Image (cartoon, rainbow, N blue to C red; front, side, top):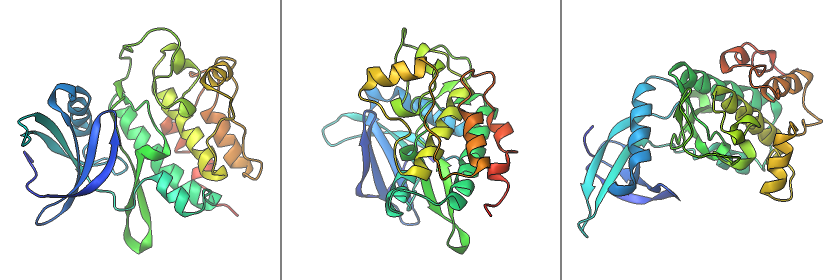
Length: 267
């Protein structure tokens, strides 16, 4: 798809990259993510990554990108994405009062892990997994499908980080200990999955900290988020596999797909 001929209905979101509009065409609704052309390198990179992930059921669909000229003669780059009428996983959590029952969390977690496994299989690390970057799509029988989105910080496996020293390379509360030292691998995404599971169960961000310096200290000391007390034994074991301090000991996304927590039903 080279361009979208349609009407902008409303703004879906804004960020450092630019803005996302809901666009209605004669046949379909799209989410169009756009930025000034001069600042669009991450959007263009995102398009290339999503092109390699076409057909992955738990990754947002991309229909291409195009350049447009605005009325003020500025150039913009536009990325055409599937529109998620259910919003984000964060919206879903808020709609349910903050917490999600473990029996539902198990199914949602499986979809997220399947998406992560596909991303890793294609040779990428997402680097910024969090509820706000997971989209909700209605599916048959009043169910939902979760799809991973926002690949602006994604990297190829083994790609060197642009920054140096100790720093957060994604959203702070979902980072792994090694990532703040610049070690970027799929193990970071697995740690982020664990953080998301804790947040779905408790309704709270996974860490307690006074400021970002305090959070960084906790990560460097190898601390992990507290496991929810009311979680099943399988659930706590799943989190232990996600939060192993040594990234080489952390389970891969493919390994997690065989974990009892996301296979067995809660009794």
